[in-house]
Amino acid sequence: MAMVSVRGLFFIVTLFLGSFFGSVFMLGPVLPVMLLSPAWYRWITDRIVATWLTLPVALLELVFGVKVVITGDGFVPGERSVIIMNHRTRLDWMFLWCCLLRFSYLRLEKICLKVALKVVPGFGWAMQVASFIFIQRRWEDDRSHMTNMLQYFCHIKEPVQLLLFPEGTDLTDNTRAKSDEFAERNGLPNYKFVLHPRTTGFTFIVDTLRKGGNLDAVHDITVAYPQNIPQTERHLVLGLFPREIHFHVQRYPLSSLPRSAAQLQSWCQERWAEKEQRLQEFYQASPRAFDSPEARVPPCKSELRVSLIKAASLLYWSFFIVLSCVGLCLWAPARVYFLLMVIFFLGQQRIMGGVEMMELACHRYWIGDGSKDEQSNGTEVKNE
Image (cartoon, rainbow, N blue to C red):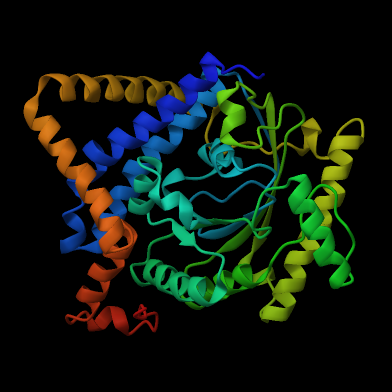
């Protein structure tokens, strides 16, 4: 029977307490700003959330010695993009932060992810406040919500880098079998290292952001794990951290993307065919094809700066967690505030459906209350 790893348990507990206390004591006091100006609220909370996103990077690289290798094109700092990536494990989205910390700004990232994650205490609360896009995998419902969220970002001129997994789920024996069935029905080849992408959401997102003037490029990222592939959170608890994480980045400027939905779907499918070939060479060839030193792209931030950010993050969040625990134990007002915030997060979930839904409601109120200049750009948020 597999044994729980002390290091793995430390990793999970630290991230949970950081997100839990961060939601209550760091994000909670900012919530009233939403009522006055959703745009300013988004500006502030994105930066607060970004400080927490550095914590997993610090733990992975400083505490557990995970090596990160990045090749290809890299990013243009601060540009607005859609990020598409193969979904090898359920944790790819977290590992990607190691790449974005070096090449972009973590405050720009939004993620399309399953709605079930919204209700997870701590993690889910912070994701709601961060305005991640939660999907139910029912397109008739998801289309309306995506429209509201994406047009909101366009409306307030909020630059985003939206991470999307077109495969819809992570790669396992079961999901590969389903992908093979889909391939046979549609006359497509079977894949071993990726799943066939579902392109409806991708084409819709690109089209919406392009029309809203909030898209500069698409970043196609291939992620690979040479050793220790942690498929789920359980593997982390058992201490099965990846020794190396390899990202191959290809940047496609907006001007190079097809205009029609059909052509964009074909374009996405072509990228996945390339991923299959690339990953086959990565895992089977020697030396690895996209891991040569000459293929590595210099990061936007120096390694010294990245190291300082990671060290500061580890120190800050360790101190913050300890201080939060001490404050709850010794200071009655902190306990009262903590209890009220927990009740708020649980209650609004049942009443409003999530903090991001409250944010959209506040935005609709303000644009309906006379902000005609904003409405003139043609990206008015539609009522659900």
